[in-house]
Length: 345
Image (cartoon, rainbow, N blue to C red; front, top):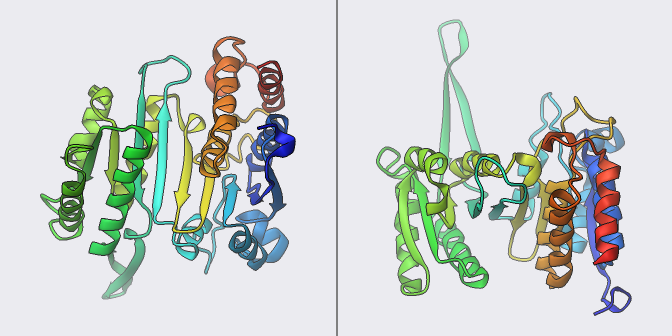
């Protein structure tokens, strides 16, 4: 299908903070060259949201995502101060984005070659419900800190079924459920129990095993090739997804996707990196790969494959890399090289 005949798809574009606008501009330029069908509605969040609207997650941004049900997001900074919660967490809660998907794949050969893993993380429960409080003792109002995690059987079942359906759709063979049911017997024991119940429905199609989180962290360093997919609770998924990114070169090489029943938000998984903001040296690959997942999501898999191929060829054939990958290219130089690869494909 030629790009001129593809149906246009409205989508929210959130540049974010720090290096966000730079990597978003590079990504939008590349997607335009690719002929991606997105019609962008640019909105603000994070510090940029506070600057423009006094809120890290302005009403206009929420309204835009409600309308498009589709967004691409740069990194956001949570302002330090009373009343400001993480905009990322608020977006997940607002649109019930219960599934976080973090695929990692070796593109640039390094310490670990031939990595091809997918982590699925429950996005709304666990300790991230942030039911926290202090207990005063004597003159110390913060003498004791208490946090309560919450998992529900329905949420655990939902994320497990999502993971198994993802495995079937993408040709994955095995899911490792990561837990701490030996200690957190109720909170993560329920997660493991629900996963085992769902796994019976997929017997003979997708294999399931389970592993305690600390053992899993060690095995990811010693022999990551034993894993195919990981299914994690919220906290463990947050930690291990960054470890997975480290296997393939860092957070700049890993995309993220958040799925709900009717809304999906795709994102760079790295931070806003204020120390290099405005210097034109940021690596846009995380957001580029996230936009590839976005293309897959809207049925434009051919464009997603062309995008991934252009990134791989730019890095390995042309040897054009940003400085975090031991190269010298600026953000715009790298983007220009990917555009040339797309044009010559």
